[in-house]
Length: 192
Ligand SMILES: Cc1cc2nc3c(=O)[nH]c(=O)nc-3n(C[C@H](O)[C@H](O)[C@H](O)COP(=O)(O)O)c2cc1C
Image 1 (tube, rainbow, N blue to C red):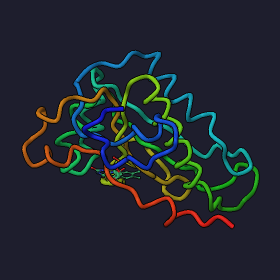
Image 2: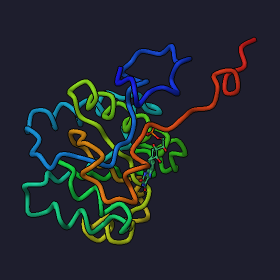
Image 3: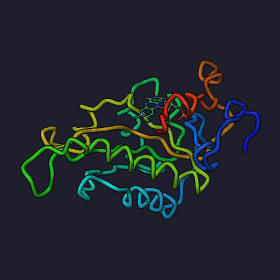
C-alpha cells in the first residue's frame, strides 16, 4: 500500500484493489495500448444488469487521436484543466428503455454505475487509474455523438491513465491530490 497516501485507511479490511483505488487528477500524458483499453471496456461489458439489458454505451478517445480534444471540450472547465493530460477520455451513455418492452428501465443508470466500477477496477489491475466526471456538458456530448435524448441519457465522463506526481498539477489542485476519507463501516452497515 502507498503508505503516506493511505493513513486514513487503517480500519480497511477489503482487498487492496478496492482500498487503493482513488481518483487522481495528475496523469502521465502517455498513450495507452489498444489492448489495455479493450480489456478495461470489456470488463464493463461483463457487469450484471437488470434483466441482462446491458443498457450502457461507451465512447472513448485516446489522446493521440484527433477526437481527443473534442472530448476534452465536452468537460466543464474545471475538469478540462487536469483531464487534458489523461490517456483516454470516455463517456458513458444509458439506454433509457428496455429492448423488448415499451417501458422505461428505471435501473439503467444504476447498471451503468456497476459497469463504471468494473472498468475502474480492471484499470487498477492493469496499473491505471480512472477519475469519474459528472461535470460535463451533456448537450455538447449529445450533439457530438448524435444521441437521441428521448431514449439515451449521458450519465458521466471519465479520465483514464497512469498516475503522475502531484507536482505536475496547477498549484490550486495539488493539495486535493490525496485519497478521500470514508464513513465508518458501522455507519453504513447495519447487520442483524
Ligand atoms: C459519477 C461521478 C461523478 C464525479 N464527478 C467529478 C467531477 O466532475 N470532477 C471531479 O474532479 N471529480 C468528480 N468525481 C470524483 C469524486 O469526487 C470522487 O470519486 C470522490 O470524492 C471519492 O474520492 P475517490 O474516488 O478518490 O475515492 C466524480 C465521481 C463520480 C463517481
